[in-house]
Image 1 (cartoon, rainbow, N blue to C red):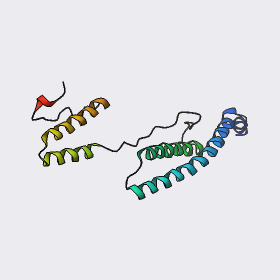
Image 2 (spheres, rainbow, N blue to C red):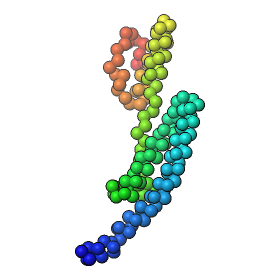
Image 3 (cartoon, rainbow, N blue to C red):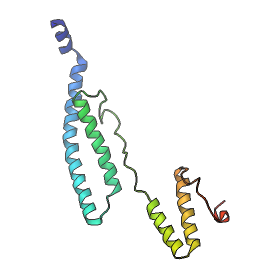
Length: 150
């Protein structure tokens, strides 16, 4: 047992981990303060405008994932070193869907009897999907195929 203890105490990788843990703990302290500040700003935006700010939500998502990585590393739940010793995590926040807004505009145009405007809106939404590389609208039906761009 004494031999194992001596080996652990003189092991360089355990002391190196302590250094990484201390740096991560300092950054974690700052990250938590920034997280709360951004959360407060986001709350004010929602309070005033009624909508969240996508970029703030995305930033806080990255920050909260980073905070979790730091906690997991410091607590020995993970051996994955957090930033700045590895890459920052990516956000999983999805951009607000424009589909609902576009669908509302199409429905309003169709109700008003302006089928040309409604079809133009549909084509514009399809073009956005094509630019993004999604195939979600590939199966949609059209009454007038001739109005589609070639």
